Image (cartoon, rainbow, N blue to C red; front, side, top):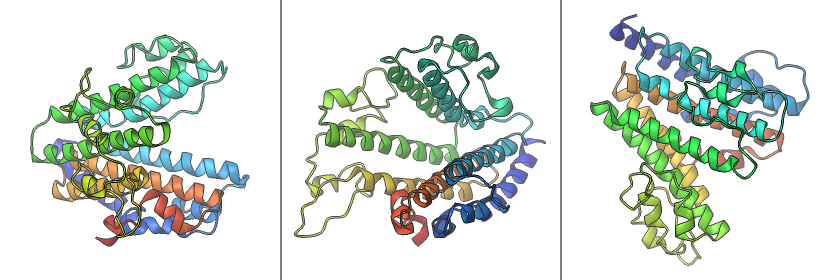
Length: 343
């Protein structure tokens, strides 16, 4: 199908899928189910399999992810020649597959672990298990050519994460147009906030120094500095007092910080920032989806929205399995922190 025709068809299909998805106000339905069986029926419109709860919980997550990937790849395949930036989105799952394989081999496991099926979009040769060099040969991960040792595994996983973020960032940066500028804002907010949350947790819970933390941040350049688009904001907030609300109210994440009540002790809360950011990114993605219909960026925005839905599904599963209240579960994922649910 030519690009214009494919764009119109994809937007119509993607809009229809979103209308039935559990995003925005409909996300709360995920957390109003009485048990995992009801959640399965809500999601898949079939009778749940007769398996123990632990297995059913895992199966819901696997099926939801499988459906998400299948829907996205089907839409991408509508194009005769999909733009590389669309295919690049799947590298996040390819990276997770590689980390699963690396961990399994590091632990001496004999069987290949369960992996996300990316079909024809996969770069890795999974049939070459357990030969890691053959698995990654010819892919963007060809440097990952040996089984990591116990003390090397974390370092290699971080290198994979760094590579993927830089690759996705550059693939969007290379494109021109207002739609890609709007999409870049989503990417920047997502990765900047992730860095800030990570930096705060390392500072609060592990008492790491700024120098130690800087080595663990995702950056766009080998030498991390305050001018780095992704790591710079995290380095700046590391200088802020943890208990000074006014200082944080002028920071990069001023719209995401936990509120201050007069007369009560306040401290910055990274979990609150994380919850708020999820909703903010979903709102930005929804805006791009509707503002630039029938474009490549609208499909990437759809991908972001559906990825958030997947996070909500996983949280709903865990809340039912661990008998956590629906309100607490919604708080955990951020769906009732204002955001789309309240306009």
